[in-house]
Length: 238
Image 1: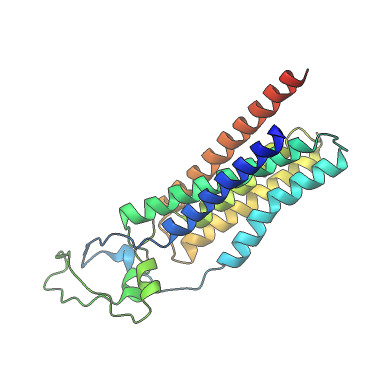
Image 2 (image 1 turned 135 degrees about the vertical axis):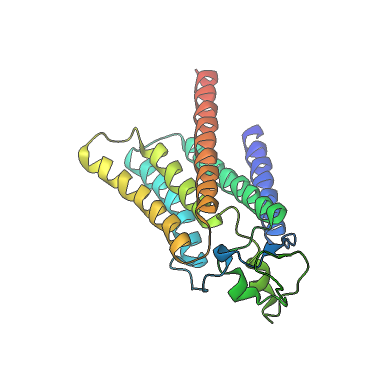
């Protein structure tokens, strides 16, 4: 009975983290000024090569499918280990996303396509003039707000969190050249996703770097916490 209580409690906590993700995702970034001659925010707007729908479906399903398949292939009898792996993945994904959302809110960094999307109502007297007060004239308010949420990259964070978590989870499963190539392919998918954020004029390079570091860090932390918990529970059972 205590086991089921623990599971219900942990699922509830992760669900609360999920709600916090949605809340922090809806925060409007702080207003940040810019210089009239800042060429880094005057790039044209492009649609994302890796859309949010594909991003979430692929990178949120990938680890869970991998964890479930490994459990099936290795014929584990302890289903609790399957639960622990999955619950820690979702916990880390939520915490990483909250970290990204707060970064976007508190920095309000302007995206490379800011001028093109926001269409600020400004009158630059000189090129080195700093504009602190302006209004976006683009009628699509959500798009205008998003143009002020560049740092850090959420795409890079989720892509690297998911792939690094999966690579670490499957690391000790098989030892072969083919398996290394599979792990490399997973890494390349995250690397490609991160690169498209720059080429699509969605983020600055430092935004992508920060997102990648956040995602990788949480993946390593969650994997460490998960393995430590399983090891301790195995010792207690013995």
